[in-house]
Image 1: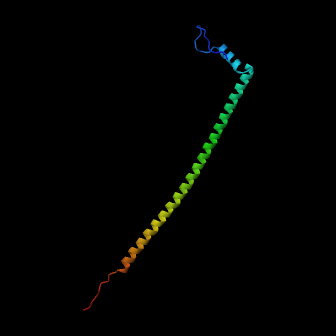
Image 2: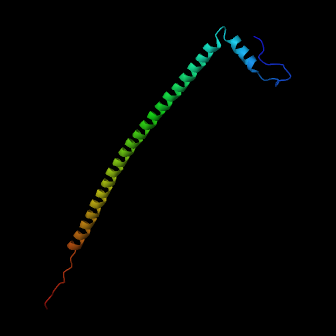
Length: 119
């Protein structure tokens, strides 16, 4: 394969020229025409863009599913917390009631009567 770099001092040395790039493409394609090559490049670009589009769509679905799952998990956690909170309030209420009953029983059981003696 011949070099695609020009050695012409009037042009930028070390850079490819349009003719060299064209010659290189024609030499690399093993008989495939430029028009055919452009079609293949266009096809590849379209496929790449379509693949990217499908991936983005899938990512959007994934993000939506994650949001739904997070909401569901949050709902379960809130429900569990609410249930436990109600249980704690009930236990506290019954305990206060128990303590109050005990105090009242103590008060009523130790009533002091004045002893009246005649005499």
